[in-house]
Image (tube, rainbow, N blue to C red; front, side):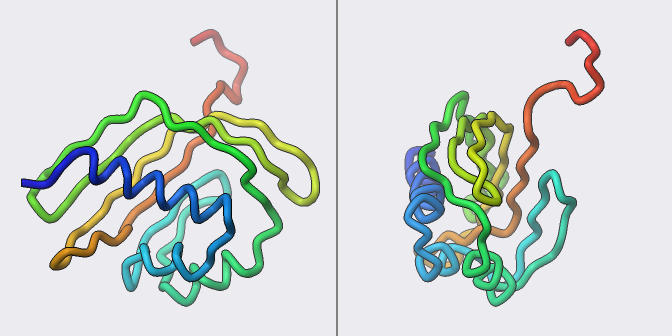
Length: 131
């Protein structure tokens, strides 16, 4: 049976690669093809596409914190982790400080887990309605 802490540690390592901008380590954690969604939309990307995204990054991630972490295992070889993340860095040379709700789906082959889906949704109400 998979271990919840193993998935939390895996997700944390992935975020750490964003802070260090370790393109090789981040790319190694991706599946051959994955789906990534966020404020700019969604796309199916290859490992090569992901490498290009990392290498051409116009952002830095200086710090992050994961909260409200939940993990589930639909099967022994599939893990889904959801959480809120507070993050600070720069985007196009301008500082940002935001909180998002993220999910990642990891699939296991042998002893290796690979990201097949990652989503990020900025928190807040873009319409200004009371929540």
